[in-house]
Amino acid sequence: AMVFQDYSLFPHMNVEQNIAYPLKNLKMNKRRRVQVVKELLDLVNLQGYEKRKSTLLSGGERQRVALARALASEPKVLLLDEPLSALDAKLRTRLREEIRRIHEETGITTIYVTHDQDEAFAIADQVIVMDRGRIIQQGSPLEIYRTPKTKFVATFTGEGTILPADAFARTLRNPYHLDIPAKHRNPKNTSLFFRPHTSHIVEDEGEVRLQYLPFLAFDEVRLVRSEFQGTHWRNSCVWEEHELFCHSDRKPQKEIFSLHVDITDLSYFEE
Image (cartoon, rainbow, N blue to C red; front, side, top):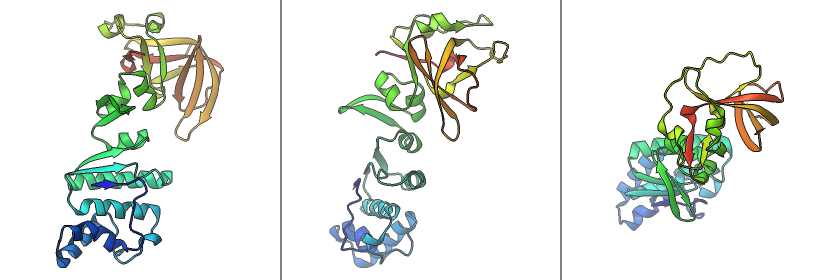
């Protein structure tokens, strides 16, 4: 079964009739249809909406009716084609939680198509990143986000800094002379990558940062722009000729500072 991007509800039918439509095609008797519709309305939290015209529903309510209709025939696989794209951000967040709950309650294998990375990470057990019809990488949301295998996956799934792999040797700090994993000593790929939230701004030379593991220290980083984004400051910077991105709890007080990144937060990939 499929939930379309525009929901595709029948405008001349009320909520009950829309949900019951696939059940009528299955030749289900009326008493059983009424029972199934009631169960589905309970599932999507639309109790009491049976007789309401579909044209009088809000966007979120239409989305729920479309989902209930798709579930009516008890499909083995459910395809959701960007079902939340027409909704505002707050409603999208609430409804994606509902979709996740419904998926867990029904156990139906669900394929959720979206260009919104937050939706994909919040809903999915497994994420598949595709480019021009080809699967580029498949894995858990955490794996996809933290260890992208290609530049496309890294940039498509969120902001990050991409540098030549030789930047590792030039910026490495190993205060306790610990062993460096082989993937860092002899990187076979061409680029290293880290996410903005994994970096730490150090503005004063005398500032002490308790750090036992090896890390990279990018000195003479120049701040280009800071933007307040509610939970953090997003900082665009330049180191040598490379663009760096970092998040911070407060706006940087200096234009020039150092940026530290733990080597455990690095990943590598080919261009």
